[in-house]
Amino acid sequence: MSASLAPECNEVKERYDSCFLKWYSEKYLRGKGTEDECAPLFQNYKKCLAAVLKERGIDKMLEEAREDHKDSDSLNMRGK
Amino acid sequence: MKVFSNDCTFDYSWEEVSTANWRKYCPWNDKSTHVIAVDTLSRSVDATTGILRTERLITCKQSAPKWLNSLMGGNETSHVYEISYVDPASKKVTMVSSNMTFSNILNVQETVVYKPASATQTRFEQQAKITALCGGWQKIKNAVEEASVTRFSENAKTGREGFEAVLEMSRRVFSEEKKKEQNIQSGQKMVA
Image 1: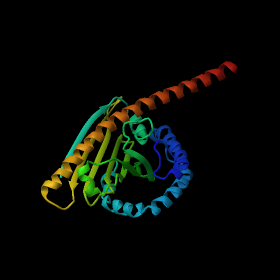
Image 2: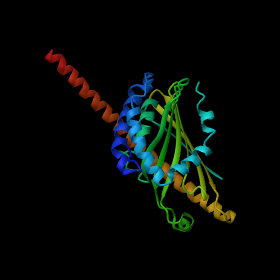
Image 3: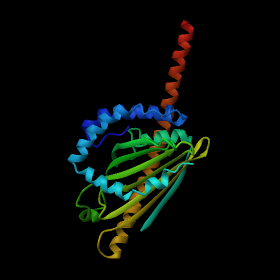
Image 4: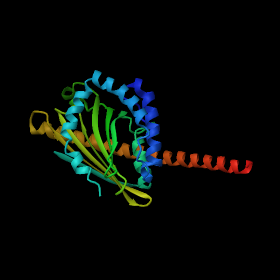
């Protein structure tokens, strides 16, 4: 998969991405994706990334972006 | 505001396309060189609808036309925020994204939808709304919007080509892995 904007997070990201892709194609799309098996790996990756986002001030930009997109969920989370 | 829209059909099932979508900017895609990083910020499955909601941060590096350099301060790196929704019940992927960087100059809001066209084909529909927010005469704003539409269209074209390469590679890797599994299984039967 693609690289992270933080090279120091590439390894933990790769592990998470591989887990997610396997879960997505083999379980989630077949209706068996109830458990989040990749959660521990995601936590490791997220921890690494959060530090870098804060350092570069991207976390503040994200807050604004989320605010701009606040109507998106109500439009797209309705389901059938 | 200018609107750019684009649609096409991929000769792959919706399941293959929605899976490969997560790898669109992996090294198999050597066309979308402007995308230098993709990070996942959050991911959750809605307990009621089963919809998978993902937030991602996409980092791009691309030079702008020289006349825009003063507006952009010579900065070539930008970030895009994306929320996507996968609804496996209705077989629909919806992706909504907008630029975080240069948001005082330009606002680009993109929506992408992937839906099955048939059991073996997937329809891709893309729309981008581009609005110049920089101060100045309408002429300048128009020029900024036009340049953005042109660049967006070029990126969309290379994006499609790159994605086709990822889809082909994904299918090949999947079938090779399946063959390996079958060989192992038949090998085990022979030994047994």
